[in-house]
Amino acid sequence: GENVEQHPSTLSVQEGDSAVIKCTYSDSASNYFPWYKQELGKRPQLIIDIRSNVGEKKDQRIAVTLNKTAKHFSLHITETQPEDSAVYFCAATSTGANNLFFGTGTRLTVIP
Amino acid sequence: DGGITQSPKYLFRKEGQNVTLSCEQNLNHDAMYWYRQDPGQGLRLIYYSQIVNDFQKGDIAEGYSVSREKKESFPLTVTSAQKNPTAFYLCASRYRLAGVGELFFGEGSRLTVL
Image 1 (spheres, rainbow over the protein chains, first blue to last red):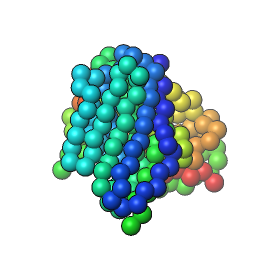
Image 2 (cartoon, rainbow over the protein chains, first blue to last red):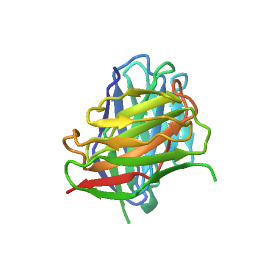
Image 3 (cartoon, chains in turn red, blue):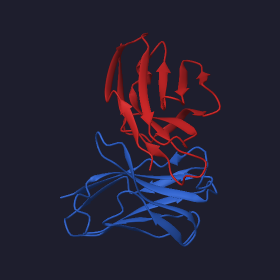
């Protein structure tokens, strides 16, 4: 089955700096890669996703890149703000899979 | 207002007792899931269901049971056989089981076994 590894487990950045979270996956059949954000005490919510037919997707200060050959994808947050502080989960799945396979999460702290 | 509702939010139980966590959705989603969240371990799948009266074990199903008698409801029972039940439990749903699509989560239930 699919195995998703996520790094780093914790990340602290100064407000205004960029943050990068990286994930690798093992199953070459995976073709959908969402990212979820979980603020303290709240439910995880989808913030961005990418499909395997594109290499990059951007939504305001958030971008995701995908390297299918190397089987890794990354979340980039620019101009970080305190409200970006949360736990971020990457995930991978394929069209025929019944489940999303999650990484272990990254706790991002943005220091004002 | 569409969404997923989990209850209770906090639950305390003594060792050896079974507890049932409720999950209801009004999104008309076919697929429903239960995840367990522990610090540093991400989201681990307990059970999932594609349709009424059908459900499948996930990666850590031992000590848990579920039912899916209605499309909207997917309750999880944490049995006394679960060796380490203290955790945060998340219910989720998606339009359909297979393929791509956003997973919608409930707000979670935190179970503490004393």
